[in-house]
Image (cartoon, rainbow, N blue to C red; front, side, top):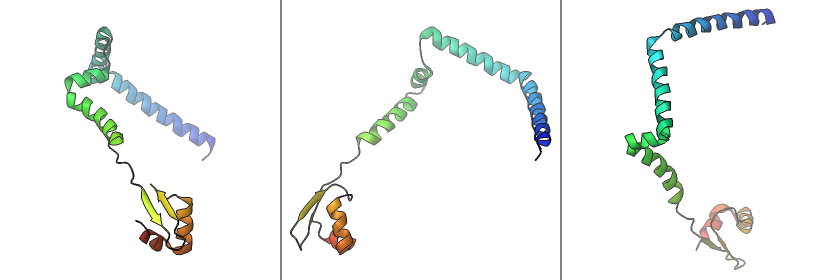
Length: 121
């Protein structure tokens, strides 16, 4: 697309958006919402409250559930159990909470994952 064609297309889009904006400026519903927003902000400022505090006052379940969900999900995670593997060939014991252990990986490469998992005590 040439720059001139792109320019004309953008100019047409801008004109359409300006028409839409003018139509919205004259909408009584929008004027009412803007007035409500301004009065609400003034009222919040007058009482030193935040929107979040007002929501919690009006609907306590909304405010509690959001904060409780974020706290409880991290606080209730079960700690990993220690797994103990004993190599029957060498008698060596490895204790780990995860599968990312250097010696355990070596054993799995040498003997296979299923075999090493059977060594779990």
